Image (cartoon, rainbow, N blue to C red; front, side, top):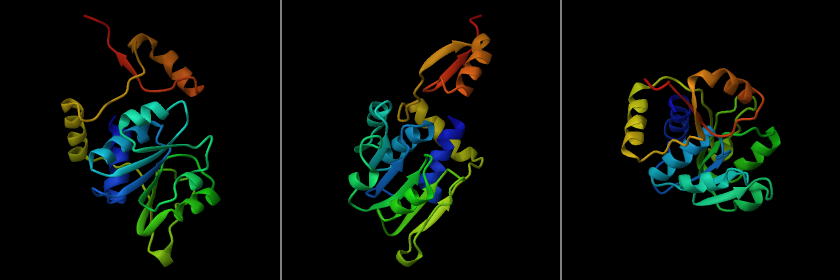
Length: 190
């Protein structure tokens, strides 16, 4: 939770300056950062449009997305026709595809990305700002996120719990792409 939760918060609120009543498009909402981004944006009073595959759409809906675009069946540009204030990209995307999405950002809006392999596009003529974020430590925000989890206002999805002794095998499965969701290793009972 610390790395993905902080990344979501920093992307939305530091770089994106998301406010209540704004519209945010979260591209890649079905991933680890996306799950927190949807919850945090919704909690902040934003209207959340999320892209997700069929495999993760129910999780994204449960996180609070107002609209879900199945990017495997419908091009995002066809599904999102009204401008958004913040475009948050969390998924691999082609440079051309990313640039095309900027057209959906209102004048004066912001494009935020956590994927440094593709430059984050903006639009100077329309004053659409571009920001690529990299996680940085922030004990204050982390403390707030932990409090939200403790209060039940921020949900941590756990796919399964495993004994610590099985952790090496889980790492191998994760590297092979066989793990979906969050796995929590628990210490042996005393």
